[in-house]
Length: 157
Image 1 (tube, rainbow, N blue to C red):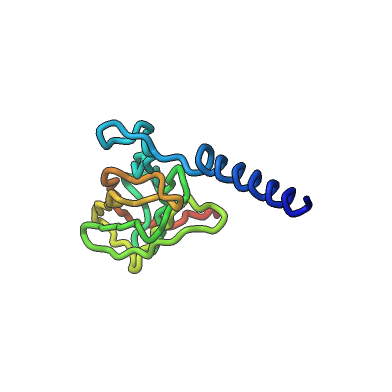
Image 2: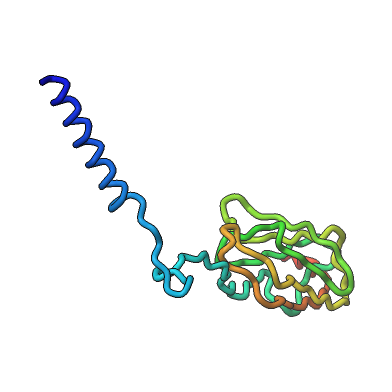
């Protein structure tokens, strides 16, 4: 009697597990002419355009001749500094850096002195991307500095 009861319980459990597998766990995807009836999720790789940055000093006449005064470029989001490409005409090389406490502020430090009497055209190339990869500069950001001498301080006597 005990063997029959055990065999009956085993058969009942086997039946329950089989039904659960057939009707609950292993659903076959239904198709319509080979196409799934439910949409397949997709990952969007779209990157949102990044607003144009602002700069300091402001473009125009700047009294920085004979110095290595840096340019601050302010973005709306923390930037990947490796994605930032800068060109200047006439040529001047820049070190691109970022402050740890203000990651959306990029510092462009010239590697030689600014020359007085020259107008520099500086371009931050499109393609610069935010640290999270969600925003990108979609157009070049171009500004000009006309460099003049640093004025000699006039002291009162």
